[in-house]
Length: 219
Ligand SMILES: [Mg+2]
Image (cartoon, rainbow, N blue to C red; front, side, top):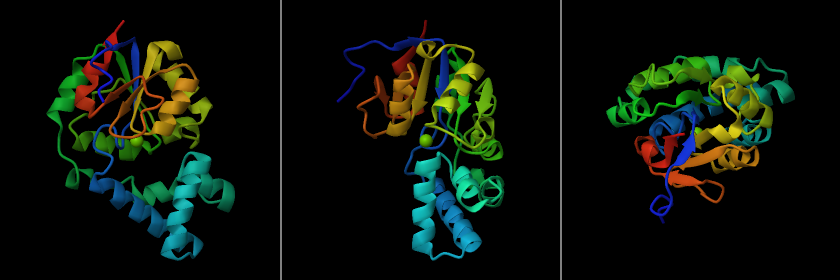
């Protein structure tokens, strides 16, 4: 059911836009590839079988916001080592192609646009480059920016809003995660869900980032 047909776009001045699952589809093979690399890292670092490693990766991410923080809090591990090993040097161009429609959609929106990701900055930069979106954002708010807390921690949202330069009601959070959308809405942000997740807390839903101009306007 379209949520756009009977309501106009959200008026806002800044956009906090997620990366994985938002700038490219959530079921893309790069996601499973990174998850598998992370599982192998956890498995070897903690001496676990593959199933237990997968369980811990998912549960730490849910519990602590990022796997980095879970590994730091629970195992006293360097929070960034897993990402340095698994993500920071990923061949993103081997997985993703430039997306001219996404670039045009973002370029046509006069809002201040901040990439807002729970991933590391080197990984984000590689994925943006592969998608042809380098320079499409005025600023990047990455895992390092939040001290590895990530979304949906409220402090992370507040710090990202500060980087966006506006108060939450003037900012739309654009994300494929229903949990992040719910957290953003509770903090007073405007919300756009990308993809087919549970849209209960989203004010607008779009199929892909190229459709963002249907959901938001400057004002
Ligand atoms: Mg995402």
